[in-house]
Length: 100
Image (cartoon, rainbow, N blue to C red):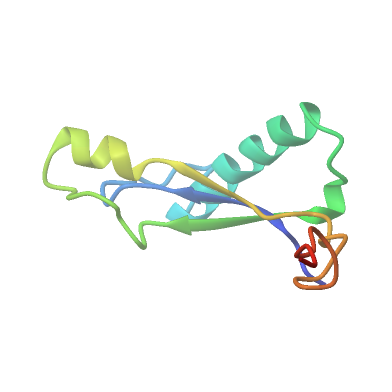
């Protein structure tokens, strides 16, 4: 089933396992879950249309060599796509040329 809304959680490359978050992916899932919870609390979006994923250390968007880069990599990405189909297909309706 198509899930049009997604929250992805990321970490930097210095992630340290803890009992609550044994892997970087587990930390990413927790971040994504929190983002999805907030998104659902603030909207009428049905929960079954939200997908979460823990990406962990994969796909850094900045260098992990600097503190600001690592901060940038500890993030949530939310993707939102349209819920409704367009009412009219292209070319089916709309303004028509005038006959002269």
